[in-house]
Amino acid sequence: MDLTLKIWRQKNAKTKGKFVTYQITGISPDCSFLEMLDQLNEKLIKENNDAIDFAKCPVSFDHDCREGICGMCGLFINGRPHGPDEGITTCQLHMRKFKDGDTIVIEPWRSKAFPIIKDLLVDRSALDKIIQAGGYVSVNTGGVPDANAILINKQNAELAMDAAACIGCGACVAACYNASAMLFASAKISQLALLPQGKVEAKERVQKMVKEMDSLGFGNCSNTYACEAECPKLINRSNIARMNREFIMAKVCYEKEEERNVGGA
Image (cartoon, rainbow, N blue to C red; front, side):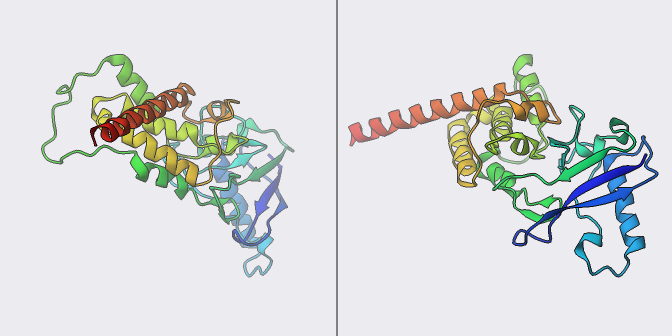
């Protein structure tokens, strides 16, 4: 396959970026998308070993496991997060989804909360900060309890596992017109809210995580459901509704407690 690649090149967050066009030949249809980028970088290194021109230097892009598990390989391909296929990450996308002679436009995630580090690399530590705000349970460590020590009904267990499938890739943010992280945050809140272990800190958790999400510059949900459509792990939008319910309940309970404290004083 012979392809034309239009790739976003940018030295860092402070410099102005631009699209640079590259020609690449001899790509196998069985090749993964990241392997194609590897071949492009090998070509650039061989042709421009002592390149001064930034556009002739290898393209920087994020990757790690290349198995669709880590969520590192977020790329905007032809206007879609992770490319034209559904239910997969960029590293699982194969070149058979494209045709010989195609032009492929490759961009980084676009969001105020995801500043560009270099080229296609973005800083997604904002998602980690949302987790740090409350996406955990406080428990005493020690002996491992039996798997059936706490009884959980199958429906809740299945829903919690579905929510826990989120890999934090940021595709939901990239797909949303408002750059909302609500699908991500709601998945992390839901996986704990549905289980007994997470109910103790549920009210405190949802308020802290939503507050942190808002403070980091993420937008609000616009109900277009583009996040659900582009999610590589097919996280359901019903988690957003669950998060909103948890948030409203937490606020109501907090206000009632405040009233009691004022009345008691």
